[in-house]
Amino acid sequence: MWQKLKEFSKNDPLIFTIILAVIIVAGGFGSVQMMHMTSTAKFCKTCHPKESAEVRGEYYTYRIGIHSEAGVSCLDCHGAPGMQGYLQAHVVAGMRSLYHEIFTSEEQVVKDLTEFASDPEKAAHAASLDSCIFCHSDAANAEMRRNRVIKVAGEFRAIDEVINPAYRKEFGRPDIMTEGTIAGVDPNHAAHMKAGVTCFNCHLGIGHSGVKDHKPAMETCFKCHDEVRKDVKVPANEDCAACHTMQKGIQQGTYVKAVQGDAWYMADLNCSDCHDSAYTRPTEEKCATCHDASYSQLMKDTQADYMAKLKKAKGIRDKYQKFFPGMEEGRKELYLEMKNIMRVLENEGSKGVHNPEYFDMLFSKVEELETAIKTWTPPVVEKVEHHAVKHEEAKEEPKEEAAPAGPVNTAEEMAMLEGSESINIAERHVPAPTKPAVIFDHKGHAERLACAECHSEPGVLKVEIKEVKGTKNVFHDELCIKCHKEKKVKTSCNTCHKK
Ligand code: HEC
Ligand code: HEC
Ligand code: HEC
Ligand code: HEC
Ligand code: HEC
Ligand code: HEC
Ligand code: HEC
Ligand code: HEC
Ligand code: HEC
Ligand code: HEC
Ligand code: HEC
Image (tube, rainbow, N blue to C red; front, side, top):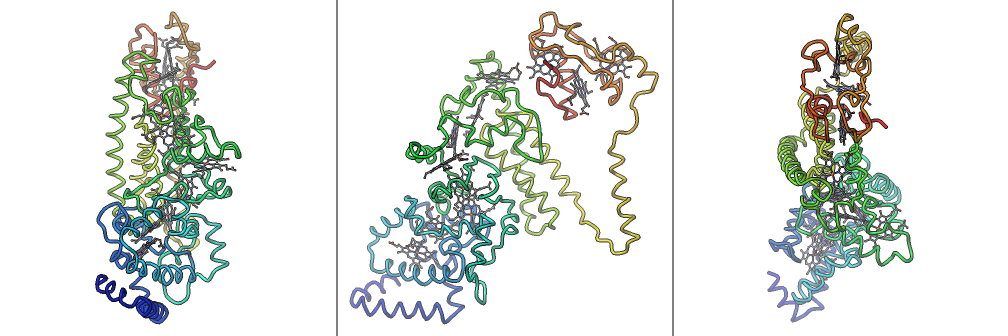
């Protein structure tokens, strides 16, 4: 059909253009139906139809991206929020497209589109910066809602229904201007926006790169920082933790608010102790430069273990993803928490190396959340006061059960501790200590744990103490750390080896 139009237009371009303009404008303003029809992604596909990640394949890449899954349409990004933005995108840009379709050679179109796709400044003309901020920041959303006519009769596209923070929260996403990123490098969005850096400087390709989770490459950051460094203060490229807040937080065991663990033994190592440069991924040989050769195998084992756990956890997440749309609010919240923990586990990149124990806690949290989603019951809204009181009581009961239930050992047994309320273990068993001696709080443990947890009979430990040397020793592997891990008690070195 376009072929025919092209032929016709070549004969009489001026008249053709005028006729088209009339049709589009009349169609645009006159018929809501027409507006709807020409707003759909399928309609755009007629001229952007390729089935590959290249220009003219925008419908295809859009379908792969995270936005289409979230129900964001072409015109949500390609027209500014509000009625005016919509008409501009629809009528003005629409006419321009049509014009180019007919009068511009295919080589020129490919060249133009390639520029829109690869140059941040051009991209800012193709897509709407306002629309990005409208959906991803609360303050910008509120301001535009105040100052623009957002919609007039009828819904033409999803963006005009976006009211934050409700909208972004539905997806468990942060306000990029006031909160950090949830999973990934945290660039400090607000500081960049203030400095005039736009979304497209970093997120070029967010619409049409052909991958689902598109993230900025490190090279993008370094390139610009190296350019602006003389004039403004930007982090040194070697200052890994300035950007890699996630990896740093994982090492410290503090990254996920809901799960606070221990700093990894190696938390004090610099990133560059293992990463020879920003672009190198350490291999297992690296471990053996500081440790003995067995640690290379340890790294491999850690990663294999991690990947197995990740696979299982993904299975859990994906199972519930299917049910997400129909979930009640309370369940949705739990699911989103799980989803964000999974984003951390999938994106962190070290496959367990940066803090195996903390990752284990995150995996446990995913399982906990699964149980919570499964067993979630809607809160009962009580109308009669009498009942409300009862409800309160019912809620308190399990709380009391969870509290420590009386002494676990008899007074007689406790009396046997006399004289050994606290024990200097190193003095007894370590001929050549290299670490601060462990003073074991015997009484404190016996107050909480049955004697039998540690003793086979009074005074006789259930483990056999051989030579205590190095980190592979009986206290670590069979008694103290073993139990701490099982009971999720702290295991960082200075918990026990206090200076
Ligand atoms: C009649 C064919 C046709 C249709 C239908 C069409 N486009 Fe295009 N579009 C083009 C052509 C041709 C270009 C290349 C323009 C150039 O060379 O600068 C283009 C360019 C674009 C650009 C690049 C920036 C710009 O504004 O020029 C965007 C964005 C775009 N189209 C989005 C859309 C969307 C969204 C839809 C659906 C609402 C759509 N197009 C429907 C033919 C079309
Ligand atoms: C209509 C609202 C809307 C518009 C417009 C919009 N986004 Fe989004 N964006 C979303 C939603 C919703 C998600 C999260 C989807 C999910 O979690 O499934 C998202 C996710 C993202 C992500 C995270 C991707 C990832 O893989 O984690 C980035 C980055 C992003 N958007 C950038 C942009 C940019 C840049 C623009 C402007 C071109 C933009 N968005 C326009 C709603 C929008
Ligand atoms: C200085 C570079 C930079 C700029 C400018 C920038 N971003 Fe980002 N953005 C990032 C990085 C880096 C991430 C984290 C990506 C990762 O590691 O997964 C991110 C993450 C996001 C996320 C996901 C947050 C989460 O945790 O769910 C959204 C949404 C987002 N950006 C939207 C935008 C929007 C909208 C703009 C423009 C207003 C913008 N960004 C501008 C670099 C930038
Ligand atoms: C998340 C927002 C978003 C959505 C949704 C979106 N785009 Fe885009 N589009 C962009 C951005 C941003 C650019 C600039 C280049 C880039 O970053 O990929 C762009 C560039 C383009 C371009 C010109 C450059 C190129 O890559 O060819 C065309 C044409 C285009 N989009 C068409 C579409 C069509 C058609 C749809 C729907 C099927 C669509 N876009 C949906 C954000 C979006
Ligand atoms: C187009 C240029 C440009 C790009 C691209 C860019 N930055 Fe920046 N960056 C700046 C400028 C300018 C500043 C200084 C901002 C200010 O005045 O505080 C800055 C500052 C920073 C800071 C310090 C912010 C603070 O808290 O003071 C961090 C962290 C940062 N950038 C991370 C990133 C990351 C991560 C990326 C890549 C995803 C990136 N930048 C890409 C220009 C850029
Ligand atoms: C200016 C911010 C910034 C600094 C400084 C920085 N990175 Fe990155 N780095 C990024 C971004 C953005 C990515 C890509 C997003 C991602 O992988 O989450 C990345 C990716 C990586 C990757 C993955 C491989 C790759 O090429 O994508 C490694 C490994 C890495 N960084 C290590 C380091 C180390 C080590 C340092 C310090 C020597 C460092 N980075 C400094 C922002 C930075
Ligand atoms: C004990 C050594 C060690 C230390 C210290 C360390 N890393 Fe890593 N890191 C690794 C290993 C091993 C990998 C996984 C490499 C692989 O699987 O290819 C990794 C992976 C990564 C990745 C993911 C690369 C990718 O492919 O996505 C990033 C990013 C990263 N580290 C950043 C950091 C940062 C930032 C720090 C400091 C806060 C740091 N690392 C400290 C050993 C270390
Ligand atoms: C730059 C030197 C260095 C590199 C490289 C290094 N480590 Fe370590 N590692 C240390 C230090 C220092 C400690 C802390 C020991 C202590 O507190 O007694 C440590 C502690 C550990 C511990 C806990 C204590 C123990 O000995 O069992 C493990 C496990 C470990 N490292 C594994 C690894 C693995 C796996 C790699 C390779 C990815 C690696 N390390 C690379 C220096 C390094
Ligand atoms: C968390 C582990 C743990 C628990 C629980 C525990 N003990 Fe011990 N107990 C030890 C350790 C370790 C030693 C020191 C063993 C050694 O030095 O050979 C010890 C030593 C003793 C000794 C020998 C005293 C000494 O000075 O050598 C007696 C008696 C004893 N425990 C009784 C008890 C009784 C009775 C209970 C319960 C009321 C109890 N223990 C609970 C770990 C525990
Ligand atoms: C059978 C399980 C078990 C064994 C064995 C065990 N612990 Fe504990 N440990 C616990 C529990 C439970 C706590 C209490 C944590 C709490 O209530 O905060 C604890 C707490 C501690 C604390 C205090 C941690 C804090 O909160 O700062 C230290 C120190 C400690 N244990 C050292 C040891 C040493 C040394 C050994 C080996 C001689 C040991 N533990 C053996 C279970 C055990
Ligand atoms: C839950 C308690 C606990 C934790 C946590 C713990 N240790 Fe130990 N460790 C002991 C006990 C008990 C001994 C034997 C008594 C002693 O040396 O004080 C011991 C002995 C050792 C020894 C052999 C004795 C020596 O001084 O040479 C080394 C080495 C050692 N630990 C290193 C570490 C390192 C490194 C960490 C952190 C990765 C750590 N330990 C964490 C309880 C613990």
